[in-house]
Structures are given as C-alpha cells and as structure tokens.
Length: 152
Image (cartoon, rainbow, N blue to C red):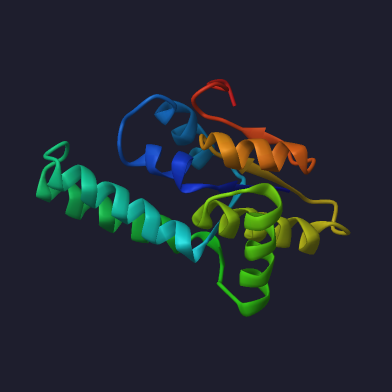
C-alpha cells in the first residue's frame, strides 16, 4: 500500500481551486492512505480563513469547506506532535534550514517512513512547497508536486 503524506501546500488544493487541484482530487479519489501531521489540519483551515477574509471565498463556502476538511481528516492517518517529533523537527530545521512548519512535516514524514520501513509499504510526499520538496528529495523520498506532476 502507498501512503500519501499530504503537505498543506498540496492538501489545500482539494478545497480551493488553483493550479494542481485536479491532481489532488485524483489522489483523494484513489485507494491510497492519506497521512498528515495534526499541524497540517490547522494550516489548511488557516489558509482558507485567510482566503475568506480576503473575499476570495464566501463565508458560506468557508464553512462548507471546513466541514469537508473535518470529514476528510477523519479518514487520515493523523500524526500527533510529540516531544520526540519536535526534537526531530528542530534537528531538521537546523540541518536543512527548513521553516518551522516544514520541519514539523518533514519530521512527521520521516517518522511514518521509519514505521513503514519493514512493512513493504511506502510513503510519498505530496507537496508544492519548494523547500520541503527539496529536503525530502535530498533525503531519498519520492515527491509528487500537483502543480508540476498533473498526471500523478
């Protein structure tokens, strides 16, 4: 089985149409397990709230999309923030010069990959964030960028 770690830079494309949205919709309709740190849930909601405040979506759309996010989230493998995970994120931030949230997602991605390492399953990162993609690829992860890999 393939596990898709959905970084918020890609995940938000499910609820707000932009470049790469069609790819993300296809990934959500597939049989893959979806994974994200709990931080990702907050980031996706925050992105849509900013779009609502900027009048890019209506209040009604925001509320409907937030409900959809919550329904989707119930089917995710949810990665909790732990002290160990935060230590790994701090290390990733220092070693790879990642922003804070990207370092948390990178540490969560590595944690999932380590848990799956002897299972025959694999984890792929789905992200449009340049720095996170670069760090993941340099660490040997396969990355799907919905903005540049539309057929994924």
